[in-house]
Length: 183
Image 1 (cartoon, rainbow, N blue to C red):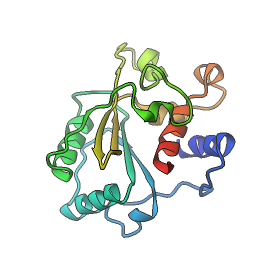
Image 2: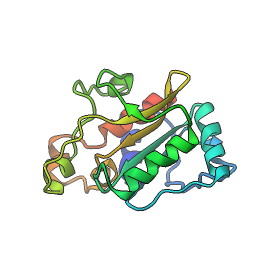
Image 3: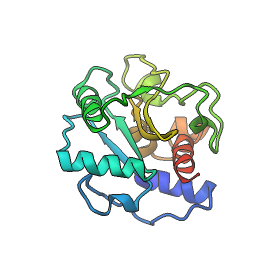
Image 4: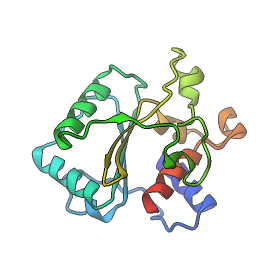
């Protein structure tokens, strides 16, 4: 996934990027060195109290954690446990529906109807469930945590020759997230 997004950042923008993906723990002292962190999975999410504190400091410094449920499941283990961890990490600041008019949907490319659909929603999982919104925790008027059930991680991991990508570059929303963080 990271290679396709990094290639698109280089192709569409002048934002300097590391040439290779960096894997970092929420407990790392280097977390504050990065403006954008991507997290995905399908299993239980648990943070230690030290990791929660690091995530709060990361958010307060202007960082954005984008978490994407690769199960595409609103009631699955990842979804339930991630939302529970965000309530523990940001008490009193729940994940709320992000309105389709939010600036993140027009920070570089324009998505007038809110978050773009993924091929997993349209035909990949076979359940025909389309998630019409993303959720977010905002701090100081900015998104600190962006949460998706849309499986963007797998969408962005696709080979560039796939049919969906040939119609519309599926990494464009990733560019919006990165530009939003950098603005």
